Length: 108
Image (cartoon, rainbow, N blue to C red; front, side, top):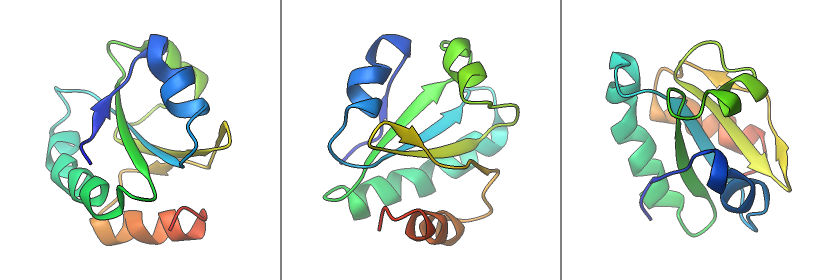
C-alpha cells in the first residue's frame, strides 16, 4: 500500500474515521531528514498495509493540522486509532524505531 498525502479537507475522513490505525508523517518537502526517512516510512506502508494505513501531511500546505497536533519539529509521526492521536514520535532514527513505537501503541 502506498503512502497517501492528506490535507485538512481529507483528514477527518481519511485519518480520524479510518477503520484501520493510521500512521501520519508530518513533514515538508524542504526537510532533508524527512526526505531521508520517507523510504523507511514507505517500506512500512508496504510491509504492514494490511493492518495499517500510512499518510503524509505537508505542514506547509496544512499548517492548521500541524498546529492542532502540536507539531513543532519535523518529521513527527503520530498514530491515529479510533479518532485519537498517540504521543508523537519525533525524528525517529530508523524504521526499527518506528516499528517498536507502532508495537508500543498497539498498531502491530
